Length: 446
Ligand code: ARG
Image (cartoon, rainbow, N blue to C red; front, side):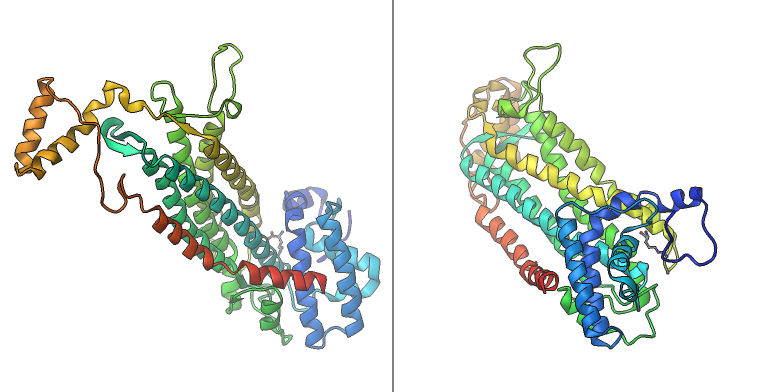
């Protein structure tokens, strides 16, 4: 068993070690790049306040760059007997550089180190989610425009209700994503604050320059109060999880619609053959498994805020090891959501709609309101017109005029897709991706 960062004159038993380390050796690898970037900023600041010599900083930064390159090339692992990513990086430095490696941890605790790692990692992940949401948004809006003149039945209670259109259907999900983007932005802004310098949760007697690490890492500002910075563990993940769940909610609903509308009984849309799966017994089957799996994964993702909440709910302020468990549910969520977003965008792009659904007389009655409105517009009071059309329907005399004249904002004839695109564009402008990328690049390349 390797020595722990905190080990003095007693050794934990192997069972205690196994239980407390948990899945950190596997999950912390995801945080490795962020951990090294964070250390680069921290030691640059330590040199600035006189806690490291300039040549010590130079050798440390050079070695951290080597470690970073190894991480990016997939050549990094947390060795057996090493607890977590923070210990592994410090161990590598000390092994390769000797005592100077042991100096990097002045004024820092693994508590603020893991807070920082999680924020840097989440910041990058959120950017990827945002970019994939935008890709799906564009596909949806393109399909909405493409099929804006094709009518389809609209339902309430799953009963045929009123005319809708594929333009409306695709566009609705685009607008939903534009709203979800607001949650992603709020989450991003919470994430984009620097917790480094809060140390174990109560700051340090070293005169740490927290503004300097804030700038080096491209953060908007810092989590000022050191106690609050530590309280952010769990709160950050929960709020980000709400944003992910908002996106997941949109996609799960889209996936359900797609499964339903692709069924032979509806046949409103057709999934491309190469996007469906077959049956081992029924030779004709072309199943929408991708959307079914997307639906389940996205429904599961909507439990994430609750999972995070329940893990950290009853903790008082200050660090607790409970918080480590959040990583187990939080970190894998991003790959799952990104995967679903990619699959949806791919299939939506290839989805074709049935332009002749309304030839089927089972949908005739959805034009009843159009007829009522026509009569009302000609001067008959609405309630009388409603009654007249109702009686015609009951008597089998109703003959639909399969035309619609909807002109108001957001309706079949006036989708306002340009406004929806503007909504999305204005939210996207608020993400400081370039500033963050420039800072991270400068820090890692020197
Ligand atoms: N693996 C730990 C976590 O995720 C790192 C922080 C350890 N801090 C401590 N005081 N034991 O929370």
